[in-house]
Image 1 (tube, rainbow, N blue to C red):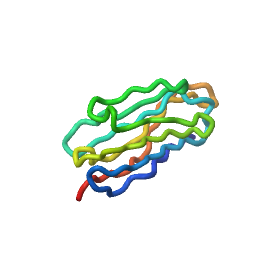
Image 2: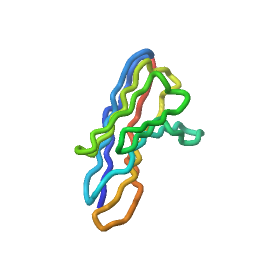
Image 3: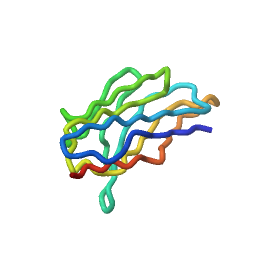
Image 4: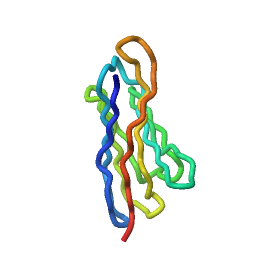
Length: 120
């Protein structure tokens, strides 16, 4: 059994910052990659940022230069530092983990998500 839990969301004013965390736990052998996605009602889920176990990262065009993804593989944790937040960043942010389980299967797990609201 694998669990993925996000934290760090909340209400912030435009121009402010938030730092999200994503922790994977359970029957995990190794993590291949961790990614943040976001979704608002009526819109498709979009990739915000992803990072491999080796530190290679990819960002969505709308967050480049403002958001930074990092990871601590030993702690099976990914972070998303979000700066210069805009109202358009308001969404539910969910973490996705690509991993190998202890029984030797490669699987993909999602967390429940954390709400980020940018508003004055």
